[in-house]
Length: 165
Image 1 (cartoon, rainbow, N blue to C red):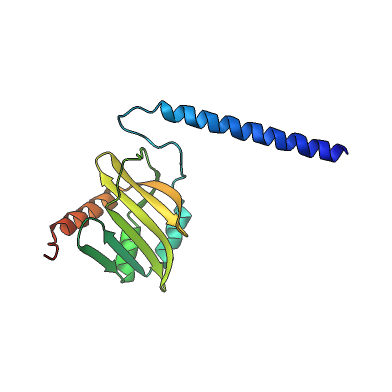
Image 2: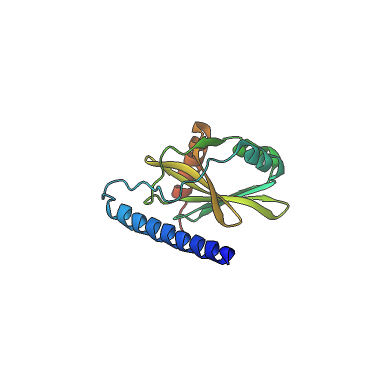
C-alpha cells in the first residue's frame, strides 16, 4: 500500500514540474525582442578533442555541399582530409543564432560510412560549426581562424561557379 502511495505522489510531482517548466518556457519566448535572436533552447557542448582526433584518424573522404550554388567538392586523399580536419576547433561557439543559415554541409566518411556531418556557418554574426552524429545535432563549436578562412575561400569560389542556363 505504501509503495502505491509513493508511486502516485511521484507521478503527481513529475506532472507538476513538467507543467511548470512548460509555462516558464512559454513566458520566456514572449520576452524575445526582434533584434538578434540568440538560441538558448538547445545549448550544445563543444566538440570534444578526442572526437576530432577519432575523425582525423578514420576519415578517408569529405564531401562539401555548397547550398545556393551549383558546386560541390569531394576530398579523398588522406593528407587533404586530415589537413582540413586539423583546422576544426574544439572551442565553444561564442554566439549562435536562430536566424543563421548554413551555406555549407560537410559529410565525413570512412570506408563509405558516414562518421558525422557538419553545418558550417560563415557570416559575420554566425561563425560556428554544428556537428551531427546519426542525424542528431550533437556538438557546436567555433571555427579556427585557419579553418574559417579555408571555408570562406572555397565558398567564394563556389559562388563564382555559373549555374547551367
